[in-house]
Each structure stands twice: as C-alpha cells, then as structure tokens.
Image (tube, rainbow, N blue to C red; front, side, top):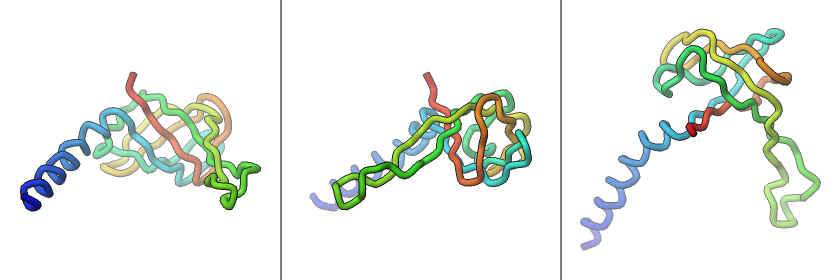
Length: 111
C-alpha cells in the first residue's frame, strides 16, 4: 500500500514538471552590458527568440524575518526580449523597459 502510494505520488510529481515549465519559465540575469544581458534560460527551458519576459528584482522589505515574513518582496522592474539562444542553458536578451542588474530574475508566464 505504501509502495503504491509512493509510486503514485512520484509519478504525479514527475508528470507535473513539464507542465510547470510550459506555464512558467524563470532564470537569472548572469551579466549586464548596457542594455544587453545574458540570462540563464535556454533551449531546454523552451526559450525562443522574440519572447518578452518580466524583469523581477527581489528587494529587502521593512518586515524582518523574525516578524514572520521572508524579509524580501518581488518587484517587477521592467521587461526584456530574447534576441539570441546561445545553447540549452543560456540566451541573450535586450532590455525593453527598466534597468537590469546581475542576479535579477527574468520570467515568462503563459496566458
């Protein structure tokens, strides 16, 4: 019974993986040169030239972790567009709106 339940749960989590990546694609900004970025999103993530992604920064909030919060909040600070897929893991992007920093995040959510 336990083995069957474990197998069912494992199968469910494995099958949810590809669906998740179709709904949300997320990666880190690795380098910034003016308005040109290298992001940690590539072919394996489903990245395509022309896709626009939200530029997100995690900033410290006034709420301390001891108060029960994480001490950070997400801010959407702009938008980038993928102009080149380098390989399975990396792509080049250009800033469309806002200003990027290394360690910011980019994400695409399907509608």
